[in-house]
Amino acid sequence: MFSSAQSLPPALFAAFGLLVLAALAAPIFARNRRAAGIVHLVLTAAAAAVLLLIGFKAVFQGGMSEAQNIVLGPLTVPFLLDGLSGLFLIVLSFVVASSALYAVRYMDHDPEYGVGGFYAAFPLFVLGMAALLVVDDLSTGFTIAWQVMTVASFFLIRYEKRSAAGVRAASKYLVLMEAAWLLVLAGGAAAGGGVGDSLHEIGLKAEGLSGGGVLLVFGLLLLGFGLKAGVFPLGQLWMPDAYTAAPSPISALFSGVMCKAGIFGLIRVFFFLSPAVAGFDPRLWGAVLSTIGTLTLFIGTLQSVKQSDAKRLLAYSSIGQVGYIVLALGVALWTAGASDPAVRALAGVAMLGGLFHVLNHAAFKGLLFLSSGSLLYATGTKDLNKLGGLVKLMPVSAAVAAVASISIAGMPPTSGFASKWTIISASLLSGPASPVIVLFGIVALFTSAVTLACYVKFFGLSFTSSRSAVTSVKPVREVPLSMLVPKIILGSVIVLQGLLPFQFIGLVRSALNHSAGFPLAGGLETGFEASLAGLRIKDVYGVSLNAAAAPLIVLSLLVIAFFIAAFLRGSAGAKERTVPTWLCGYQQLDEKNRYVDRGMFAALKDFFRWTGGR
Image 1 (spheres, helix red, strand yellow):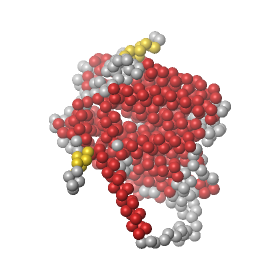
Image 2 (tube, rainbow, N blue to C red):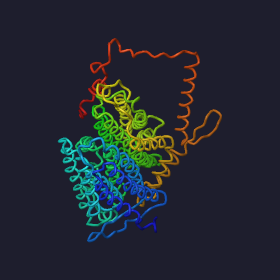
Image 3 (cartoon, rainbow, N blue to C red):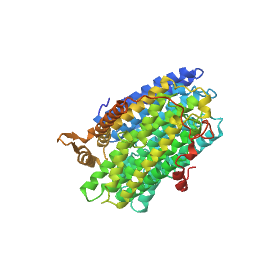
Image 4 (cartoon, helix red, strand yellow):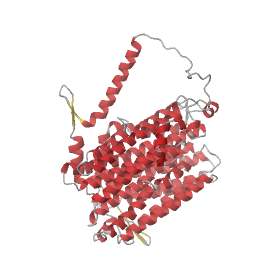
């Protein structure tokens, strides 16, 4: 697929063409909603498959070591497809294909609105995101990709155009994303970059910057990409409203992929552009990113606990999860220049953990938003106080939602535990670089416990609590198979990420090692081999096992313990009998004595009321 290490694969533009074709062809069939969805699925999934192959090729075999200029009419745009771009294309492909399949039947639930505009904007949104990952400038190519992504997503957010809240959310989103675009353009211009200059060329022009110039350039770029990523307090301005208003397949794309465009930009700026700037202080900017990341994960997660709307809860939670990634980037910058080799190795560990969390978050948050869409599809509401008792009515949806919930909460041996613990461990072990990083790690560890509380609430009120008046009266059934399949696939990926974390960390390491100019490439080998893969586990008989087997060992012990407990439970021959649930003295279970949102973790929410988000 690659003719040389320096050339852009033609298949990339074939994928772009398929997305444009999907935007043109699917709306033609809009009178038949199902037919339009199938046409859109075939073309979009084909484009995603091509992007997936291109991504894997770049990650494992190497892509381009320097930018290649492509002439688009009167414009010249530098493109760069390296390992980092390939990694994010892989993430994009999986979530796009899952969301496109899910949308075929999901879009039936609200026949009040036509689907022509939806199926025109969806592939253009994907096209903009994919292009943003491979253009290598902060001017022409960046502008084209950003505007295609932003305008298409604006129309997706305001899909329910008769909803005043949805229209307001879309308008606010558009204004803020245009502001982010202007901030990034201003940052590139302040660095001396001209129209069509690649990041490498911008770095050469900015080499002599010092003092205020460095603060201006990197401050503008941090604000622009941070606004897109959703860091505190910028994410609170648009993410909860936009994620709630958009159709659920789009919310999955927003959280799983679109906010990662901001993370991608931060990595390009602070790890690829910065080494060329002599006046750049990695410890200072590492401290800035770490502080922002810690505030983001702490406040975003606490705000999510306070939500009653399922999608708003997930939106605030997305802000919190982005905070973990930004914290990892900050720790990597902060420790990269340490004098102690062991501390420098932690920079690689933090970077691996941060990008591993990018993979994990795309899977479990994409699945959670699809799960919230299933709740809305089956019950007509996403108010957690009006749900309940769905575990028997929607057992498959409940099972995959449980997998995603325990993963985002960081419970072992899930994917969320593997990536979060890698980030937190790197922070806790970085004391020689700064005690403040250790404090940030402690905050991140506490916030994981809050995340667990948040998803006990989400899953409990949705599936395992008693049925509400809504779910008791309304006939509720499991969602159609085409909506279950993408959720099962994402759930399976989550399980694999948890049981085989070293394989996915190896994927991240390969991506970064195939990204020319990445300053921590050598540290990745040191951090990965010495700090992680080199660990051995020995039992009392002296049998040595690689640490990569630890999740499987934990899972095996849990399975064995389960069977032992089941054996002991039945060993006395006791018989089971079914009796009505004891209602603590109440005569019947109704809306007056159901356990609802306001009663869950009330003391915690009251103690942290100063964090806002009610």
